[in-house]
Length: 111
Length: 114
Image 1 (cartoon, rainbow over the protein chains, first blue to last red):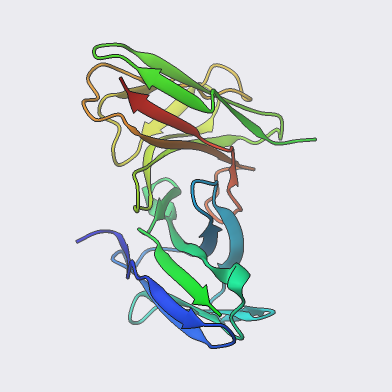
Image 2: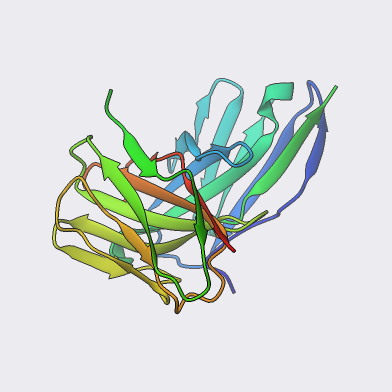
């Protein structure tokens, strides 16, 4: 089993709709969680960190479920510009702060 | 402006050849990372370094080597032992390597085999 897993998609989303997807991690000792956005053949850019209590940034909401070992990202009122690959990143401090990426979830927002 | 510079943007390797990818940062960050990305895949960690003169293997270190002689530089050598080197390589850094910080990325190097 991979340490960090994501549904590769693509998630085809009508403009204005809501989309949500998860990222599961295998090591319960994982301590820090992030969502990055990557456009085709570009470097990833930090979208948001994920806090234990959940957090929101505009149309984006991130949640952490430690009991079931997953994080989620929800995008409301999808825009065409939200089309991208969303990568989750998990850090395990016990493993020397190794930042491990999931395989990414591709989201396509269509008019 | 501060940032991470990767060079070259495109690199071609002949069979049996070693090639070195450059990564330089002027952010005064302690930790630096090398990732490999194959088409349609996520990033896989090759090597990382939390401090000068020290580095650790990531998940796919075989066929690669690194050095960290200076804080601002973390070059990656793709050796002839790496049989499938064609990929997009990304260098990144964080302030202190604590694992709870934003990754700053370079713009990547696309390596292809001739």
